[in-house]
Image (cartoon, rainbow, N blue to C red; front, side, top):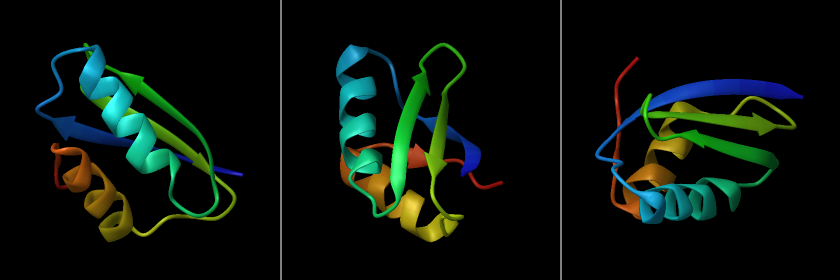
Length: 69
């Protein structure tokens, strides 16, 4: 298992958490998504490493922005 943490801009409420969890959780190989709203972080556990562009696309689909690392 691989765990990666991403900074996400624009999250402000429980709906944000739900949207991000749904979109990122739907990615192939993802087994867990944890959103830390106060820190603006999303931690993703997956079977194999995920390409940042794939995570960025899921976060964009949810209506938020992945901060470049």
